[in-house]
Picture (cartoon, rainbow, N blue to C red):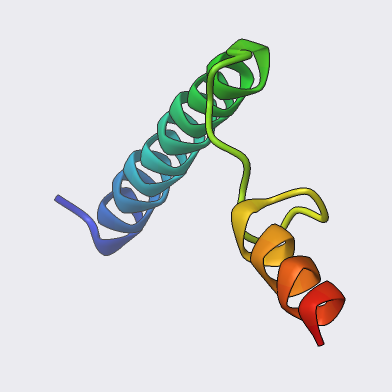
Length: 60
């Protein structure tokens, strides 16, 4: 096996793995976005951490 063939095979395997990972992640994100019962992110404006901070600000 020539070094050129090895490099090409490694490149194609890596590219395939990255594409497969991206498609899997995209599918999981789309499922979560379509789920109305999914919990809000703590980074979201209406997420659980921000609601607690607003309650503390109102109490002060």
